[in-house]
Length: 482
Ligand code: TXE
Image (cartoon, rainbow, N blue to C red; front, side, top):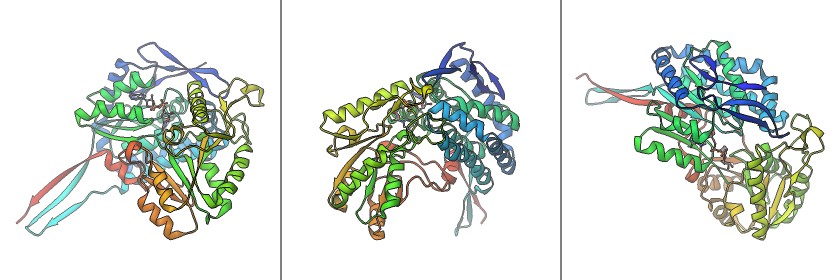
């Protein structure tokens, strides 16, 4: 059985606590590894290693830091097939998805910030009074990157790449539920010759080592992606100490469908937005708002398409829906469906746990892709993040009503608008309360653009030079020369 170790000061080490957590494959419900459950002593070692690596790494020319990130990207590319397989086993998501999306995009994150390291510039301001200001963008020191289970390698690299590019040293904490790709990545860091201490990866559970990292006074900034409740708890710890914090949290994102949408790409896009990775992406469109004149046509076709999604062993090439990530998560999703039923929702398809045909997966945690309608816009199912393959359909009469339903939740991460009326699309883009808006598409990402949400979906933006700015502190220098 594989032992997953911490990566501290360039070495792979078991936790000093001597404790281990089980790592379980969601598709089979069997344990296939043991994970170091780190404690305070591991954290002290990691912080000390990062602090001693910082002076040299922060003074390393940006071009050389970029070169190192590119080497890491190339290592991922060279290992893409084993990584795709590991991530599929670890998360339960279809291998076609990990091959096409997660692993290539993880490499792209590192390539992008390898370039960004050399393109990152600061400002200068001339004053007529005879002075010039220039702004230094100094790395912060030791920063923490805490990532969730739904896109484990993608989100780990998305966070550590800008932090490292800007000259910081990092303590990363992957999710204890899906730690395997981070473990493989730490071995790639060794092979690539990343200087010891520049990146340290501590494994273990959230309330334990996660909370200890957040509370550690040696950590200057925290970049976190995960649930809204966890984000709120981290904010409570960090706020009184005025440390920098970026939170990318949950969403209850609307897909808004107008009658004049280009039908075929819209249908395919809305299904993909609802059910990619079994609905376990913070950007998934879990509320589908449909103009009433086409509501019935849309509903019937949507239900047919969702009912036809191929559920099965994530390792099969033709599987479109794999397992959800854990037993607890499966039960939480099923509980939400049950509550929706009790609130008067009609389950149009799905709604139950499922035992797939594959013998290997008989005990796995699978859920039928589910479509519900008939619920009020303010019902729990339409307000709270379920984070599973569950989509609720809501009819609307006109643009104003669509907007008010779309904005009527505490979240504001993403929205997609499907319409052939370009004026309307722009109007909605202006008024939707969301950090990311897609028009006639979903989840197209340009890494140069800011990523993050408003309201309870978080604070701060990741992505592009915005992320590099987050990981630096501006220091203004004013020189009087006259
Ligand atoms: O995430 P957690 P969970 C949502 C989704 C899901 C819910 C809970 O709705 O059902 O969150 O998921 C670490 N201090 N999203 O409980 O707990 C933890 O170890 C420091 C949305 O699995 O937020 C992991 O590394 N760290 C989402 C990371 O935080 C702590 C992605 C995320 O775990 C900690 C995942 C603490 N006190 C879930 N407690 C998105 N926005 O993409 C936990 N952690």
